[in-house]
Figure (tube, rainbow, N blue to C red):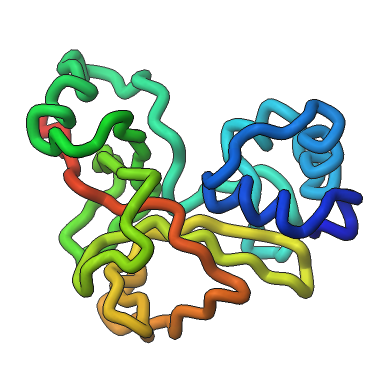
Length: 182
């Protein structure tokens, strides 16, 4: 993907891992074009692979929460800080499908620490970005980390993935979740 976009691989990897979110507009636009999405969709993280293998906006397993969930009036930031005071800036994501093996349901709001420890504790629920170098696509999934495996796919019989640092990066750690019951 870095070659297609014409940006250094290390810069693209740092962006994906959230280590360095600063880039110039020209590089951001080049990467968005390489994924075949608008700059807005790229910045919002709406990129990936559809079932057909096409690159572009897709319904992902997890999406950035925009505070637009109907009927939810609670101040999530205040609640997250009360539950997890060690996190200075929690990030919120909405789960796009059921993950019953890790007790998460579609629509759950996940509170994430985007600066997790270098090696999260075994059993931690993590956001993992998986890059397919062959197609230049990426998807973000939520899984439970049991080094060296990631477990908890969308079906009870989903096989664990072997964590491969060459094509996968832990983007964050889920520290709490909220479920609207209305």
